Length: 432
Ligand SMILES: NC(=O)c1ccc[n+]([C@@H]2O[C@H](COP(=O)([O-])OP(=O)(O)OC[C@H]3O[C@@H](n4cnc5c(N)ncnc54)[C@H](OP(=O)(O)O)[C@@H]3O)[C@@H](O)[C@H]2O)c1
Image 1 (cartoon, rainbow, N blue to C red):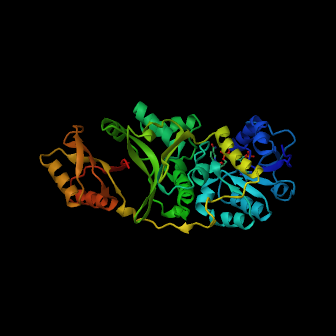
Image 2 (image 1 turned 60 degrees about the horizontal axis):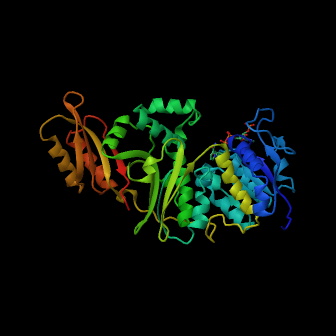
Image 3 (image 1 turned 60 degrees about the vertical axis):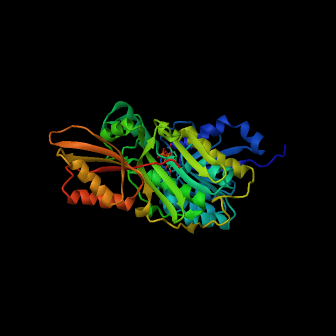
């Protein structure tokens, strides 16, 4: 076996992912030379507080530091692994590491989605690796899958459960019938949700990941700020129960598909028919379905977060570097993606689920159906059940309609005085 120099790592961050990487690396210490001809060594670890207790010991021979210069100024360090999170210091670390001629690996989806372009350009200019397998769906190798395994496919669509916190909360609401706030506080107690859960439950974390997947799948930039995003923070267990009655589960889905008019994408709570594999993904798990022109549907399922699953994803990028593979950061020769041709989100066509609180008067169903029909929306099936006196929930699924038609129909129902509470309306993922 050819004996090459070991690959020397500088880590920025020794929290959940940093310690997970160290642990996964120790567990794979025999396997890595068998696969790459080299071993990997952590030399220096940047943290805020060197005295803090750690979940995994600092590897033998490595040392903690609070000075970034100990990483950037050390010619022996080949790769800087950024695992601190946030978008300011992390960006500075990655930029300066690339400028110093070092390969970089990061798990930071927020940074790459909101502000990644110049980092990819810098990496390309220096012929350096910018690995980010860990930034989407933790232990699931979706980045390598899109960049390598499915590289010869025209990607037709991708749909993913990309946020474990939301999936855990929705699963608890589904199986226990509990309210959003109770499921959230249980998730926080179990460490599945942050003290400030906005990024997760607002859908923004899934949106970051979707922007990265779109870049990999189509080589285009869909600006994060233009992506339609709806979270699960207003989810009512009543809708989960009605959806089940209709044979569906509600999941927070990041979805993108290529249409004749451009890319249609967004993050929405979505009804999935029980026959879809994605609908059975429960708890804190993630899953992604990619439809390629030749491969047809490919389904990946696994742990979207956690110490060693995410550490394993970081290691897969480090193994590419250890093998002296040519950098293939974006999966395309161009390192600056083209701007995406974005299909007007108002023109996206999907079936919909509606729950309306309407007065319990004769003819209401006719009036609602009329307002829908005026906007070209036809009702597929409806459920009407008594609840509060004089008000009934009217629940129905529609055939495919544009988002604009749905908005107009809701405005019309409001105008007709037919709504006794804010209407609820979710997309349904149609079979392709
Ligand atoms: N947690 C997961 O399962 C997971 C999964 C996928 C991706 N990610 C991503 O991985 C990254 C790291 O997440 P994490 O969960 O490992 O975070 P974490 O547990 O909070 O750890 C962050 C680490 O970074 C260090 N740090 C933070 N700010 C610093 C600064 N200004 N200077 C020096 N060191 C600093 C901290 O030092 P101290 O320890 O001294 O405070 C800590 O060791 C994030 O981008 C996250 O989105 C996480």
